[in-house]
Image 1 (tube, rainbow, N blue to C red):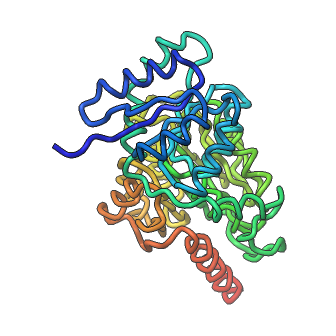
Image 2: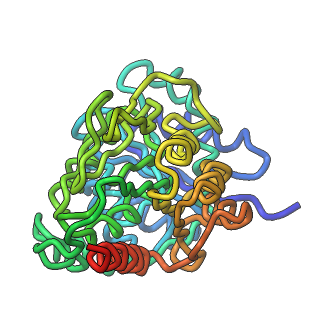
Length: 366
């Protein structure tokens, strides 16, 4: 039997520490090797016990969980699953945690904590398993992007003037991601010019968190980034993110694409599901679509991405070396859905070059 995943729980609530320890120790493949009520205690425990994964609360005495995470990822990169309160502030702080290098997060309930955490037990241990195999990196590169952004264009961003020129509004870029995807999506979007074709995005996230995610990206990108709203027209120069806890796909109304956001059932256990978005692109957008599959666990969207390719789309898949988790990209490649497999930082430039080539061909015909 392989070695168990060794987990340290860091939370200022004795009840939460007890509940999480119990949930972890019920699993045959993991064990809680220690608990700490604040980051200073945790620091010594991590140094001594060298855990595989840490679960980390956000609001704690003596040192904020975010400050601790930043230091941890600079000095001793370790897979971290954040335990965040499902509030507006909790969502904003969680986005910062993912930016600093946390692998994933669990939104803990504000009321009925004991029953709520037990209801989340499967999600918690699944995310710990994913974190245990995730590729975590030192924080400075991530911090450099965040601090260099200055709330406007990030360092990777192209010049503010539109680069693509006259391009068919029929073009649509479709992005799917899961674990590690919030930073990967940012890396792609900050490089897209203001006159980019419309972009539609499904990132696995619970309700409440996609609002903060969209707002954060909107402050960094030249394009407008927002949560998708049912029935709205999908416009060039805009990116639309599937609201957490809903299904999102595209439909056609006359010459326009429109967003469809509904309460459809989970697909591949996900809501929103990449499969739903990509399947609609295959049916509605066809050869005018570009597919992008980024880091994530599982296989959501792989089959539908192949359907997109069969319908004439051109697809980019993130390579293993730059993925936090190479699950969804691996499955997309295995299904023959990829036209190009590229490091994360090269996906947007490759797409822009292809779009610019399409513009040049259009100009030559005119």
